[in-house]
Length: 491
Image (cartoon, helix red, strand yellow):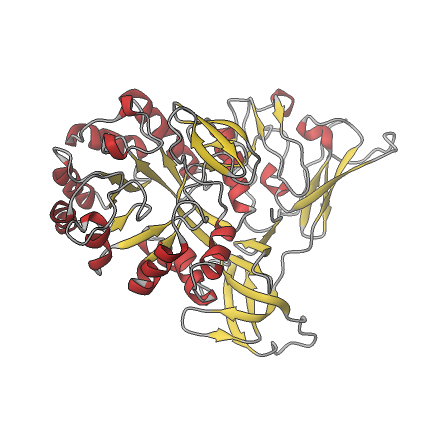
């Protein structure tokens, strides 16, 4: 039976693409949908990415992006295979595809979640300048149309959801999740980004670990392709220009001093998508590299460093504006040797990344950073593949990593190897052990990083911005996620 081409348009944001050689039956791997996990395919060279989900379309048929599966929450068996039904059916404002369209077993169909809402209400809505209790957010074609207090002036206003509506999270430092890392191929990138999206990260920067010169360029190009497709919003280069004594979970064999030639080559491979570069300012050539980053419009970050106070000040004067995971992979602050921690906290132009997972930084230090620089704290996950996954054995770049009880460590050295956080968990911890208010946590998890990496269309619940929204329950657990107004299944 020939597939029918739907005449109606898919819901806003879905692109219908055409490719003369794409054949859906060439797809070779499927990750099963389970408890809201989106389905991801790999195999054909004709795959195009949309919001983290591959799609391919035959010239003869209009086929909705596989990204449409993101809002679907379960798979159910269809007993009667004899029914003659079109391969694509419209369900309200959602598209459903028959299983044979995507190489799945016959007898499986997909059921949608709720319709994309036009009005969300909650007991508290956190805006850039206020907190409405209760409040509401009106969504119009993927953007925030209006934010207000009390009950919305509509015929049948929705009951306020218990808890808080806050902006969708922006994670500027993440290496993976869902069992996959950003050092892999496009399918791995899609799996990791989808896992973090279900944890509330509606805008994600893919972080690279130190690598040899050839692999550094190829991986920058791979992540740039994911940025071009809208899966990631940028690239963070963490290494290879790091201090060997403070390398953490970076392979020492891949560390080296920065050169302008290699920096420019990596920036070219990233095709304008590299948002931030972390380096150790005490290395030969580092200050020149920071100056080049600033010239190229890239955020220069200080991290994995053995610099002293004066060297850190010199890097800030050259244009560095971020402390990569403050306190971690740098000398501690002492009264006669304050080191980079004091220099970074003292300067009002520097933003301070914090990994708030209860492992990387002791609660007292988190509270000190928050009190000293409330408006400069940036919550990050620094997550590796085990985030939103399970304990076990993993790879981070070229190193073996073991994850036990949610803590990742390099197998041979025992060094902490990133976190297994989602941003939703980081926000909850920041409030519970860091003493932050919900408004402070929302600012550190969304508003500040969006401003830092120049995402001017998101990061706050304000009219005209993209409708990226998270719903936290009264217990601060993540209850709902909307990306550009589309509901996403949560972890």
